[in-house]
Length: 394
Image (cartoon, rainbow, N blue to C red):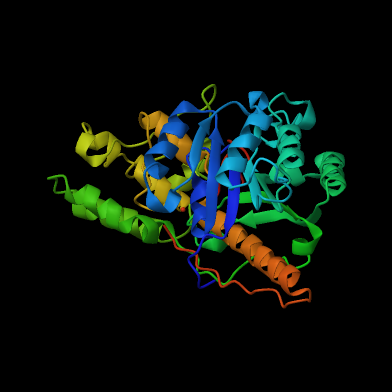
C-alpha cells in the first residue's frame, strides 16, 4: 500500500488505551469514534488523538456499551460521513472493530461464556446490525476458540451470516510473529460483506524477524542505568542485556480493578521474566520519579520495567502517552492489543476493501491487492491473567 490517503472509515469499541486504534490508524483507517468506558483510558485516547491533524474527525466517546444509544451514535456518524438527511446509511461505514472483554472466555476465570454478564458479543452484534459496516473485526483471548465454546461461536457466525457477512477467518495470531517482542496469542475474527470477503487474504506467520526483549528495551534500559551514579550500573546492565537477549517476553498482563495490580503477572510469568533478567514483582517508577534504586534497578532478579518499557513490549510507539497513575497506566498497557498485529489485520482488510471497491466500480473481477506488511517494532483490549501460556517463554 503506497498511498497515505485514509479512504476507509472505522468505529472501534472497547478501545482501551488505543493499541488496536494505533494499529488500524497505521493501516490507514480514518477513525470516526473510539468508544471506551474506563475514564483513565479515555483520558489516554484524548491525549493522543484530540487536536492531532492525522486523527481529525475522531471522537472519543466515554460510555458503557450496554447503555450506548445506537440511534444517537448513528446520527453522529451520518454527519461525520457527510450523509444527507434523506440518504440511506447503507454500507457507509467501512469497519466496526473492537476487543470485547475477555473474562467470559479466559482460562484463568470460570469460562462462563455467554452466561457471563460481561459478555459483550451480543452488544457487538447489535452494533453490527445497526451500523451495517462493510467489515467486522473482533479480537479476544484464544480461550474463545476452545471446543467448549464451539456452539457459541456457531451462533455468532450464524448471526453474522444472517446479517449478510461471510467469515474470512477466525484464528489465533501470535504477536511475536508480527514483530512484537512478546508471546501474546489472540483470537481474531474478521467477517466482511461477500463482495469484499472473496478478496480477503491473510498470512498467519508473515516474514517478520522475531524481536527479543533486549532489542526492544536496550536503549531505554541503558538510559535508566546511566542516570544513576552507582558503580554497579555497568555490570547490572550487561547482566540484564545478556539474559534479555535470549527470548521474547511472556504475556504482559494488566489485571483489573478487582484483581491484579502493577506487577508482571502470576508466578509462572514472574519466573519467566526472571529468566530474562527482569524482576516481575512490581513496576518501576519513571526515571525522573525514582526514589528507590534498590527496588527499581538493583533487585536480585534484575531491574523492574517502567510503564513505558511495558508499552514497548506491547509494540506501542514511543510517542503514545498514557494517563493516570502508575497502576492505572500499567493496566491500560497490559490490557492492550499490540498495534503491529492490529496493523497487519487492518492492512488485510484494506486490501480486500480496495479490491472489492475496484471490482464494483469496473463491473469485472480484479486481482486482490497484495499488501506488503510494514510492521514497525515499536505497538484492545482485554487481556487477562489467562491465556497464560504467555506466562512462559518458548
